[in-house]
Length: 464
Image (cartoon, rainbow, N blue to C red; front, side, top):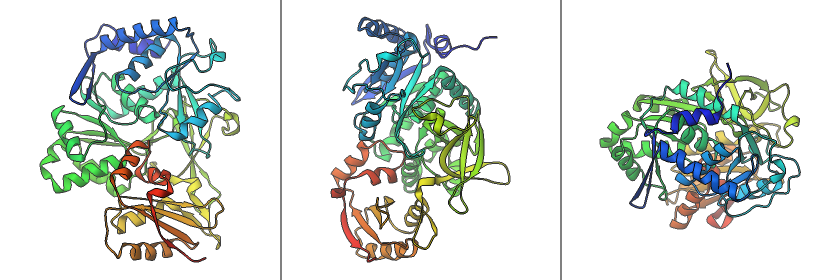
């Protein structure tokens, strides 16, 4: 029996149906689209795109999020166009998109609105997503093409593992132009028949987030660990919001969560699913430590005592230079992992975060960050090695203005870093908080690592 295409799957769920629906809330204005209205609006938009000269296989670059993103996504699905969500606020995306839209040497012109980008691919590809990835996998920013079959595989396997029920309510608060937010949040919700709520206002204070969760009776939320940490911190001092958490099903990913934090969330929430994935795999790989619709294995990594996670999956995408990084279908993820006695896998960091110091010891920077966060009053910290490998830089953001904070930082870093280092401290001013909000991020620490030097005060230069 022939398997349904992605177009047929969503057509059967949306066309002519009242539910699910999409609700967009923007500065006290609310827009509601039923499933049928979404499908009809996308059909109209497909006609407009065709009138502008689009052909199957052409790439449509989409910058605007919210309802517009979903309308254009399904217009591309109906028309056989390639959908490329892109945020020009993410400065890391610009060069990789112009450098190569999946095809080696492609000279696409980057524009600031929806446009034709690579007509030379017309007619050669079935429906696909073209997603930007930051390049943390093997250190090379790229655009990854995910095809119809891979997207369907991701939606089907993750919906089954999480047991998502139709006509429940999901709040979309992840970046829509990343694979986690677009595929395993928005599209997954529609695939499972959920009602989607989008709030297109600036980042909300935890109190406002709880108000939204309560007001809309939200039952499902996908979030990065940093967002969950803010909700938990607020709940610790405001126990009246705990009933909201107890009704909430959460899917988290994008950064490492300690076992203690997972247990805490599992006890507080209606259900907690901690996932791991990468854009190249479309994006999900593990859920609660177990493979989701794929094979994984642990392979030795050159750093002493560490091992790397490799993945083989039907949802693996395509990208320039792919043949150089895949062996018999296996992708080296660039992530450090281990397998416990029960057969569960845990991903604990990045291979490129491991460095040999002058004594020949391997240093894992994410462990250093975690140690600092656990013992000092920090909002976030990012530790990196200078390009010439001569010293480390510890970028710190903290609300604490105590005079002994630098002393505590010095003592910790002197124990953890055998090489010279600098400490940069930033106080969370309005401008700094705005900078953090506007930088798409997998975690707050990675965003802090992207901040310009002028956001910090250099308070210490360690001697060599």
